[in-house]
Image 1 (cartoon, helix red, strand yellow):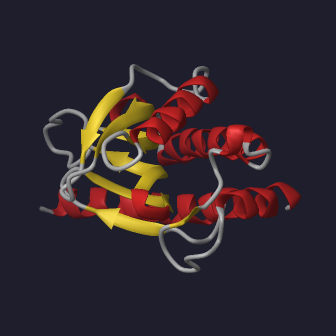
Image 2 (cartoon, rainbow, N blue to C red):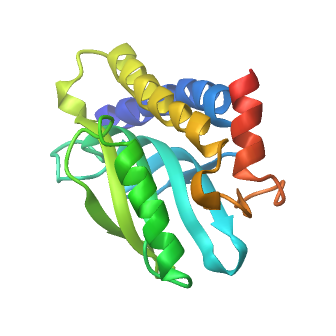
Length: 188
């Protein structure tokens, strides 16, 4: 029991350090999620009636069963929802992220599903927790993944093909567009 509590405390400390870097690079309107499958900070985005369209997450994830650990991988992902209204636009988001993240991902795309019925594609930038030599190594790797997403803001701010029109944060302030967020973060 002590080992599990020590691992949980180490993970909490890492997540807190990641959050500061995440918000500095990607924006402060984050949410934290903890479950048996993940412990991350993230930004989610919605568009009009489409609801969730994509999100950026950094933290710990269960991608395989690992004895003695709740999570098997650490890193960052981009999730793009593919089902729901406006399938043509959802396909454009998928193509955009597939192209922009081609050199960033650490493994094959996978599918995800949410308890709310969302289905989509996960672009991973992960490593197994056992491959890291220290907590600082984990933090550095996740920061590198966050930097890769921050680079996307340069393209998002240009709004190619108008696909980011009306895309806003899914938490308050509800009217903050991703284009404005991208421009704010670029100017820092």
